[in-house]
Length: 128
Image 1 (cartoon, rainbow, N blue to C red):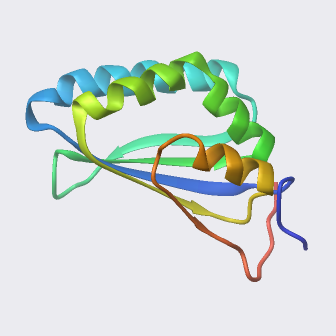
Image 2 (cartoon, helix red, strand yellow; image 1 turned 90 degrees about the vertical axis):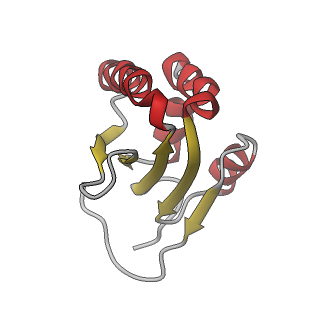
């Protein structure tokens, strides 16, 4: 199988929320999650999980149908609001992408200012 712009990929975003901003962050995360669920059919999986050992650490896990689904995600106004508010509420933010994405998607990722680290696929398969 050839991996690229038309294949699924996984995104893991790790966040350290500021101690006095947890409730505000949770409200923003819930609002964003609802907007994504109702408007993004290309988002195959979208969860927000809390670290069992540190109540200030959270992880978004997302599975995108393809590059187009990711680009649509970034165009979602709720995601734009989330990314704008994020620096006020969190101290640390890392984003890892597992799976090969196309050049256009890489360009979009690089233009966001978000610290993406992309792991490209060397072997395997994907079932949708």
